[in-house]
Length: 458
Ligand code: UD1
Ligand code: CA
Image (cartoon, rainbow, N blue to C red; front, side, top):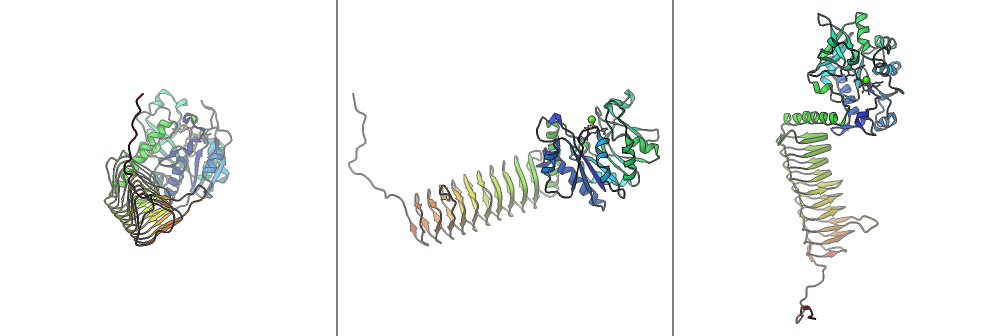
């Protein structure tokens, strides 16, 4: 299958310097959704999509955003003379041996199943995706004869009053036999109200040549909606999120409110996962069986082991969290954290580039950075791993069964031996020997006969 995605338009109403098709929907550019849908549909039909994207406004920026995709073919449409003109720019690249599917970079929610249905309806004919709208205003209308055969599409601006009453509209998405399509494109004229080369005029040409036009009516109007403004983008974002929420619930997750979850990447859930309101999932997140996610958490590229609880208000990035752990509330992990099973990371604890062994706990107000922490350790409230000397970062090793007292400062590079206890308020910068109590703080003294100063009378 040849796939041509139109993405040359300016998107003036977005009022943005970002080209329209790069605006993110559910965490990735709208154009990426369209490409993925086309590829999935073609796979379902046993083919391989050859994808060309027609770009114009912001062409370089669009290409750069997909620079890792060597499989895409870019076609420049220097001036936007209409949808037919846009497809014509790609004509030379189209393989006559397979049909051509036309899609739009700003119609991001079209479903692979619908495209597959359209491809099957096309065979040697033309397949046209249409939709019935309560308010068809602005769209091209699908004109049929008495038998229901499609005759042509009339743009709103060229339509008669009677034609404007038709509620079946053109989504713009179509499949056509390629050699014929090339001929039809070459024959388009711009003799119409907008002086544009309309892709839609190929329908009337097909009919004239006796090629059947099979209209496939989309089941969900949402999947045919285009984005022209921030408001429409927000509307489609909700639709996309709702679809994801449905998928999660089908997979067995319990969502406190399916309208209050945002997945901007890929979220994989096991059985009996609970997710409270206001959570944002970015990148790739995996929640194993029985994971509990409390309210208002952000997880970006995180895996969470079975039975672990992430209480509310955590901000977790690039972390691997074991099973039966307890994180938060108000915990923060910065990239590259590995927490073993049964670890507890509590309120106002920040962990960065560190590993914590089985059952270790940092329950309150601590910073653990660039550290390797063994099993069963207790990082006391207010413990700070001073990993940065102002120029370089250094590593800390905390062996198994260490307890650090409240407000201890561990100045890296340093090793705290297994079973050691660091007394509260200590600042340690040398090896802390295993199995002993080390205290490094001023000794407590009491000054006898000391008198508190009193205010002098004038
Ligand atoms: C088009 C259809 C209309 C249909 C509607 C559905 C035509 C003539 N009309 O109208 O029947 O109901 O879509 O939304 O096809 N584009 C280019 N280059 C161009 C012109 C457009 O790449 O020269 C791209 C735009 O970026 C946009 C898409 O094609 O993504 C549609 O163009 P637009 O001008 O919005 O078409 P409509 O007037 O909405
Ligand atoms: Ca137009």
